[in-house]
Amino acid sequence: MKKIITILLLATVIFSCKKSSFLDDKTNGLTEDAVFTDSIQTINFLNRIYVDAGYSFGPSRFNSAGGTGNTELATDNAEGNNNLSVWADSYVQGVIGPNNVSTNFATDKDFWTTPYKNIRRINLLLSKLPDAPLSAAMKNRMRGEARFLRAYFYHYMIVAFGGVPVIEDQVFGINDIINLPRNNFSDCVNYITSELDAAATELSTVVYKDIDYGRVTRGACLALKSRVLLYAASPLFNGGAITTSPALLPLVGYPSTDNNRWMAAANAAEALINTGLYSLNVDNVTRPGNGFYQLFLKRVNSEYIFAYNRPAQKEFETFYLPPTRSGSSVMKPTQSLAEAFPMRDGKSIKESSAFNANDPYVNRDPRFEFSMIYNGLSYISNTGVKTQVFTYTSTGSAIANATSDAYTPQNKFTGYFSRKMLDENLTNASSGTTERAWPLIRYAEILLNYAEAITEAGQPEKAYDKLKLLRERAGILPGADGLYGLKANMTVAEMREVVRNERRIELAFEDHRWNDIRRWKIASTVLKGFNSVDIITRSATNTYKHTIGTAPRPLNFRDAMYLLPLPLAEIQKMPLMLQNPGY
Image 1: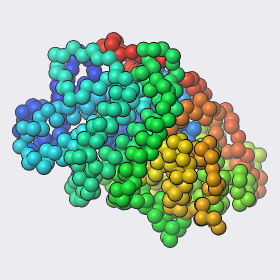
Image 2: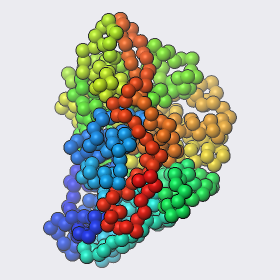
Image 3: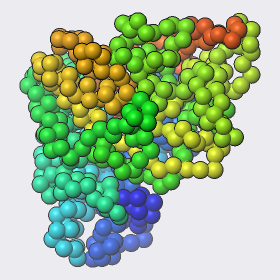
Image 4: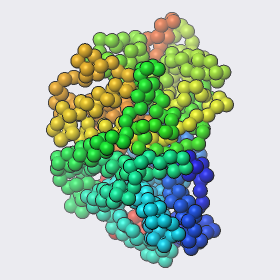
C-alpha cells in the first residue's frame, strides 16, 4: 500500500449532486465509461478510496492550514492552543453547533462529508464492478475491500451522530432529489456488522506483500466488527440516551439496555484473537518497553490489523515536538494523563511505594516515557546531541528557565510535550525521515476490547490474561504473583476502572479517547479544569506542584455534546432527518 498512498492515484469521477451536498463529490475529467472499462483505472478508483481511510486519525484533521491533532484534542488527554478555528477547541468550549460541526473547519476532514463522499464512491464502484475487465478473483477481492471500507466510514458516523441514513447500494445521480430519514441506531449497527461478515467471506486472511501491502484482509473485518459491537454495548448507546423523545430514542441508541450486547462484543473480539493472525510487538531486551516504542515506526509488524501507510517523513516530529526541537507543539499532554500511567511495578502512583512526588518520573511504566516528554528528559536536539528538555517555570526559581519550552499557562503549555509515535532520533530540524503507518486498528485494541466487554458481561476474571499481555509488552515487572501489578480477584467495578485506564494509556493519541469518554458517559466528569504541572526550580532540585489552573480553553461541556449535531445544511436539504437532542 506504500505505492497506493504515495502515488495518490487517479481522481474519482462521480457526478456532483447540485440539489444536496449529501454524498457530494466532484468530477475530474474522466468519464465513468473511461474508468470502469479499464482494469487499471478501476483498481485506481478503489485506491483513491483508501486514500481517505486515515481521515479521522491524521494530525492535520480539522484545520486545513496545518497540523492540529485529531479528536484527542477534545479530551482530557491533551490541551490545544485555544484556536476557535480548530474544531476540538470549539468542541471543548461548548460552541459547537449544527452550523459549524462539519464544513467550516477543514476541507475533506470533517465528520459528515468525507464519509458520505466515499460511501458514494464505493456504491458506484460496486455497481460497475461486475462488468469491469478484471478476473473473477480480483472482483471478489475488490468487492470485499470496498464493503469493508464502506462499513468503516459508516462506523465513524454512528459513534459521532447515532443513527444516520443508510443508503445501502444506491447511487444517486445529479438530478435526484434526496430527502432521507435517519436509520435507527440498531439498523445501522446491524447493517455495518452484516457488511463486515459478508466482506470477510470474500477476503483472504493473508497479509499482502509488496505493492498490495496494507490492503484490507479478513482480519480487518473481524477487528472492526469487534469495535462496532463494543461501542454499541456501551452506556451511551445501550439504553443510555440523553433524551426521552419517542422519536429520537431509537435514532441515538438502543431504547433499552441489554447486557447481552457486551457478550456479543466479547465474542467478536475473541473471534479475531483466536485466529492467531496477530500478536503484540514485543522487545524488552533492548530496553523495557522498546517493542511499544518501535511499533509506531514500522510499517510492517505483527500488530497492525489496518493501518494507513505513509511515505518517509517526519510529520509527527513537526507537529508535536517542543519549540527547542523546532516543533509546533500543537498537542500538549495533560497532568491527568501523566498520572494515569502506573509505576514499573504496575501499581498506580497512589498505591506504589516506589512513587516519589519530588521525583515523579522515575520507575514509571515505560510507556510513560515513550508517550510524553517531561521536565528533565534527555532528548535528541537539533544538533544531533541529546540534551535535557526543561519545562519548569522561572517563577520563584533560583535557576531561571530561559528556554522556549518553559511552562506558562499563558503559552498554553502543560509542562509536557507529546512523544507518542515519534522517532527519538529526529527533530523537525533534522535532515532525516522515518517510516511509519498510522495505526487505525491494531491488536492491542482488540485485547482491550475483549477485556472491557468480558468484564461488563460479568466475568472480570477473564480479562486478566489480556491485560497481562499488554503490561508485559509495556515492560512492567511481573511481580512475585505474576499479575504485573494487577490486584487479584477484582470485582466488575474494580476491573472496569483498570481496563478503562489501561485503554487510555495504551491507546493515547491514537484517536480513541474522544469516542471512549463519550460512550462511557464520563466526558462531563473528565472535561474539567486545565491539567498542568507547576515545576519550580529553587536550586538544582525540582519541586513539583500538580495543579488544575485556569484553562487556556475554558471548558464548557454539556450533555448534548455526547453526540454531535447533524450539519444544519443537511437538515435543511433533507428535512426528514431529525436533529440530535439538545441542538
